Structure formats: structure tokens, C-alpha cells
Length: 89
Image 1 (cartoon, one colour):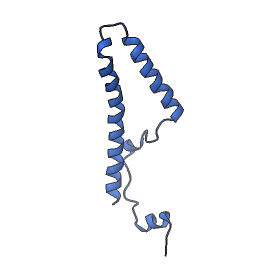
Image 2 (cartoon, helix red, strand yellow; image 1 turned 90 degrees about the horizontal axis):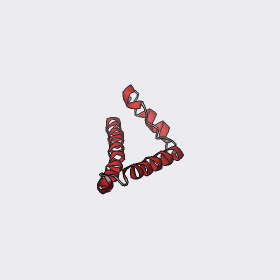
Image 3 (cartoon, helix red, strand yellow; image 1 turned 45 degrees about the vertical axis):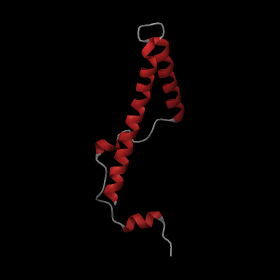
Image 4 (cartoon, helix red, strand yellow; image 1 turned 90 degrees about the vertical axis):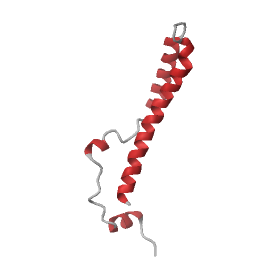
């Protein structure tokens, strides 16, 4: 006998487990097109601005720093999802 996921979750009575209000803000990712345009603009402006300056030789490190900002933010979101998943278990 199989049950739907909704029925299985209802049977678990998990109503007491809710994320805190501050954890709900900004949970949805930005629209793909907006994200692509913004990241492209940031990337382009970074390399354009730093060209022919004393920071030009550090441009690769600055670029990787920008990439790592997004990776760190994604890791925080994954950690939140993992914590909430553990709370449900």
C-alpha cells in the first residue's frame, strides 16, 4: 500500500517544527535572468575597472574572491536547509 508524500508528512505531525521568521526571508533565489545579468555586469565592471591600474596584477585573485562570495553564501543556505531537515527527522 502506498501513500502520498503529503499524507505521510501529515501522519508525522511535524507542525511544531517551523523555521524562525528571520530564516524565511530571502529563501527563494532571484530569477535566473536577473542573476545572470547582475553577475555578468559585476564581473565585467570588476575587470574593466581594475585594468590599467595597480590592482591589475591582482585581478585574478579578486575574481576568485568574488566567486568565493557566492560559494560561501550558497554553503550557508545549504547549512540552513540541512539543519531544518535534521529538525524534521
